[in-house]
Structures are given as structure tokens and as C-alpha cells.
Amino acid sequence: MLYPDLYKSLEAARWNMAKDVPWDRFDSSLLSDEQALTVKMNAITEWSALPATEMFLRDNRDDSDFSAFMSIWFYEEQKHALVLMEYLRRFRPELAPSEPELHAVRFEFDPAPPLETLMLHFCGELRLTQWYRRASEWHTEPVIKKIYDLLSRDEARHGGAYLKYMKQAIDRFGDSARAAFAKIGVLMASSARSGKPLHPTNLHVNEALFPRDTIQSRLPNPDWLDHWLSEQIRFDKDCEQRVIGGILRNLSSLFGQVFETAQDLNRFRKSLSPAPG
Image (cartoon, rainbow, N blue to C red; front, side, top):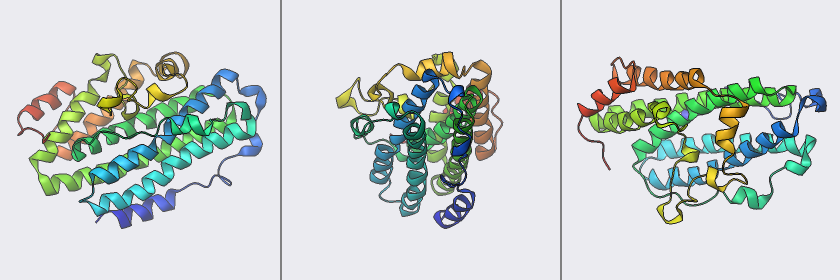
């Protein structure tokens, strides 16, 4: 069972919103309206941990260990939304998300194979780690720079926790788990070729609600994410390569193979029995 040790390690690393965020260092001259608006969009996006948690609990009814871990993940992800909202409440109250704007991203996700979903969210944490590092660099106001640094570190720890559950799944399910992880790994490591930054919040998750069945499609500005990445924090090809490299390195370690490219991983995937679902 992984939950007890994960609880201890994540509890030891947990930051305090009152003590660890330097609220008194806020400098209004270093925060533009453009920058403040991106904080609002990220706050709403982080709120989508709510429907994601509902999905995880529904689709992992047979895994009480992982479901218990969701209590930590959900708490920390909702805390991300909260600290971003608190920043706006203090310093740009007119931009604080409304309750209807937050509730708009709570909708039911279609059932999906649990192992593929696990891998998808592992990759999502790797990506958010890098996105928030770039956001911290792009911002000029010291308090929000610190907040994004804290969030980035949390996302990296969450990725590490998901990786432990992936190792456990391989021990339990062998090649069926490897096939599921490799399938999603190829997809996520090929994002540069697809021309789209793949992340759980911009993937379609409810066929009946298409095309408004992504988290990003339900934001006040559905086009915000692409603009934030390309024109604001400038998440360029080198940044994207760090995400891809992280996926390939982790899967190389997990599978005991060497994957230097998505093509290497795809060849390995084809050598396995098909992933369930």
C-alpha cells in the first residue's frame, strides 16, 4: 500500500499559504492587467481537479489505496486554485473568478481505462511542472512568481507519486500495464508533431457534450491556453523537449529500456500485447 508513505512525504513538503507566500512583498507596479488575467485562467483550470477526482474515484472503485491518495492530490490541487484566487482577491479583486465560472469546469468525464488515465495524468503533472516554471520566470511581480514556484514543485511531487502507482501497476498487471502506459506515452511524447500541447485539460472527455467537453473550452476565454503558452510564457520547442525528455526518461526507467525518441517508445509498444480498452 502506497498511501501511508505518500501521505508522510507529501505532508513533510507541504507549504503554508499564510506563512510561505510573501504577501507583504506585493508590488503593484510589477503586475500588468495581462498578467493578472492569466492568474484567473489558471485558477479556474486548477479548479477542474474537482471533476477529475470524481472521475478517479468512480473508475478506481477496486483500488482503495489509489483512491485514498486522491484525498492528498485533490486537497493540494484545490489549494492551487485557492492560492491563485486569494492573490486576485487581495490585489486584483475585479478579476477573481466567480462561482459560476468555477462551476462551469465541473462536468462528468466519460469512463476511461484507469491505467491509461493514470499515465495521462502523470504526463500532465510533468507538463504542468514545466509550464509553471516558465510562468514564474515570465511574471515580474514577486508574490506571484513565488506562488508559481510553489505550484511547480507540487506538480513535480504529484508526478512522482503517480509514477509509484505506475510501478505498482506493472508489478500487478505486467504487460497490460506496460502497453497502456506506452500507448499514452507515445501520444504525449508526440505533441510537438501534432502541433498541440497535450494535457488533460485540453483533451475531449465527454462525447455527449462535444465540442464543449474540454476544461479549456469552458473557460471564459477558450483560446487562452494557446496564447498563454506561445505569446506570454513562450513555451517554445526547447521547453517542450524538456517535457518529452521527462516522459521518455521515466518510461525508460520504468520499463528497463532506453527510449530516446517517441518512435523508440512506439516500437516497444508494438512489441507488447494490446492495451486493454
